[in-house]
Amino acid sequence: MGTPGWILLTHSEEGIPIALFKDSRDVVTQIRIVIDERLCSDTVFRVVQIAKDQYVVCDIEYLNGTHVFETWNFQTRSTKIQELLDLFHHTDLSALFSVADAPYGTTIRGYESYDDVPGSMGVFLPVTT
Image (tube, rainbow, N blue to C red):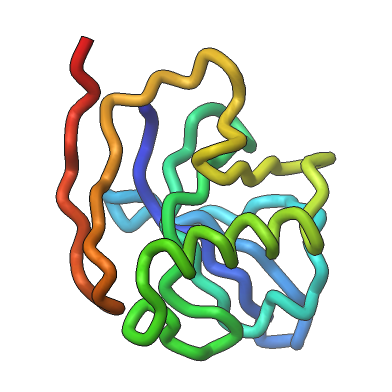
């Protein structure tokens, strides 16, 4: 589906809100994004870059410095991702999409299946045709 990685919403050394994309090769690039700066206190999304400036948000690890992965199950994290994107993000520069809102035609190779235990790892299930 694209390049897996992480979006880091944080602050620069000068205290300016910034967004960074770190890909699977640990290459970090700053991205331009329209998002409420209240999310830029160490929020970390697991994403897949599907095109230049387009990302599908698959999971959330930290929300404003709180390690939510350990305390929320996958369904709660997915619901929170949708709420955060709906309330605090505009797709004018870089676009973040939930898995449910991925653009039409986005190739999905499969989905992760989770149990209801907070902090548990998902199992990848390929799409069968």
